[in-house]
Length: 216
Image (cartoon, rainbow, N blue to C red; front, top):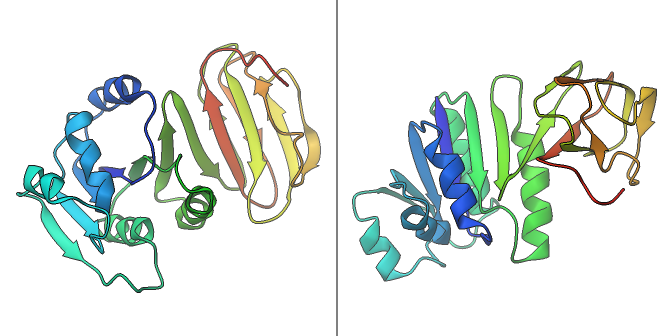
């Protein structure tokens, strides 16, 4: 089961996201409060809207009048995105794509990344789409990294160091090494797809950007 979650960040390349979404089949579309406004822009229909409704306009509510509303109080421990992820996982979802998690408030961006890292599990893959970029969290023992020669791959440890990292098919190999909260894992490149990342401990955020990076 595939789920699309629309959050209340900022979109910059709407046409790119619209094209990516049109190539997928989503069984459930969840609008996260004000993120529901992106449904019409991305040519999807929100099935559910979750949140405290503090950032959704009456116009957007009218546009999504057939969506199921799940209202939460404004003063709560969880963010609206966390509530949406919890709801999605209760539906037995296999894969979640989150759009709109970037842009806007810096604290919310950082929180969103940590939240998605925490919510990711072997039974449910969570992807963040930002324009043509895709981010997701991998766990030991690792996995293949899809892409084409010249695509940029960044490996960023989340929640602490990641160790025993070995890569294949990338321009800058890692051989049983550790990545810490520095910049060494940024802007690697795929040379021989599929690339592969194996590691022993920790969590790694993978960010895939099609095409060659101009910086390292």
